Length: 595
Image (cartoon, rainbow, N blue to C red; front, side, top):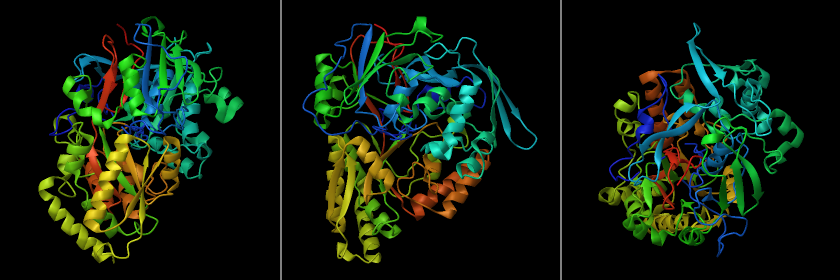
């Protein structure tokens, strides 16, 4: 997820160097999420920025003060929707869970500086986590089997050993329909996963197996270029079966039951105030960890965030008042780095008037993206002309043109072409039965509470009313409420954002399959579903071509999404802090920070 240059979102070296032959690379999910989605966005998902109702001051609680070399205090969002690895779909929750849990693979400091950060952050690269090695075998039937050997020195925070059975349970839990995980489709690459998610097979038939306590075997439908990255993805982190079965949905709220296997463990969760994590003395690399505690301040007011940073209460922030951004960039205090994601608008495709693709296309063409990035967001974002952002690999990978360049754009996004776009938009709306906006119902634009999102919303409201002659009202909701409202489809137009979960177009495309957990547009197309399914079974150039065709359907034919810009990531970090590292999937890591 994102950058400093205006020409294109160039990925940092994390995508160019991988430990493993055939390794994907990075991104997401995002996650906000974990994409994929974003609250930034996080996400999910998902770069969405912090949200929630405004408060005049920072929340009270047992926070640390200025940087003392032993305790670090950060803010990435307000109260997370969940910190259950399987249920989270936002970047903020993904960042938190990755400090407490560790997958078969993990992100580590690559030792190379992120461009434009003046030494404050390094790139992340994929490496072994709870696994010490793996073997990959291509089977005669086209399936691919990975056999992971776990480390001997891995333990849960309560001292119990981590076993292959913990991964087996976590991965089967993810695809179990009763879990209702938005990210269940991340495992549709595993044999029998789709049948299980459809209710046609039992979760026990998922092709993952604990051969013994230290050997975990996974069989994929076909070779997957980004599988190693999936093994570090938050939704695939291990969890304890006995803890979840004993405590149900409440297991994440109590430090006594939030049993984790990562570098840190939960010390306290003071809701709507802070989550405090402390070093996990059972972690195999405990001796090399940095801060004694990481305090995640849960804040939703950009003015309070900047004030807290300036006073030393906060050591790291991602959000600040929109009016301050230009000055903070000019002073060098605000850093801008690469971020692979798209800020966009989605339409509720099952409800009038946005069940009509002509209306959706008209609303999409009526947007002046150059004005938004130059006058509203002002953080180096690039106008979007498609959904998959710049910087995502095409068939030739890191050595070739990216997916966006190969696929081209679906409209001209810049000022020079805006007048022509507007004329086309008016014609389309008239063709849909609403000449000059006559007879068009009043519609509502939904966004999560945040000054930056509000500024974008107001710009969109003016453009749609000015160009199309329609009336658009604005409605903002606190982050968790907003996520649920959008997920339920209880809206007409909604702000959205998606951060790559890994560096591949599929992370932006498979979420729109019928009934997908992150399909907030309620979109359904047999043609689109078919192309995605074919792409998931294909390899190489054929696979990429199928994904280009799928984007042609959702963007160039059905106009389900209205991409506004490709993200950049902004942040501020207290002076004197070293050792923070970052992946353009949107994840910052604080566990090895030091003076």
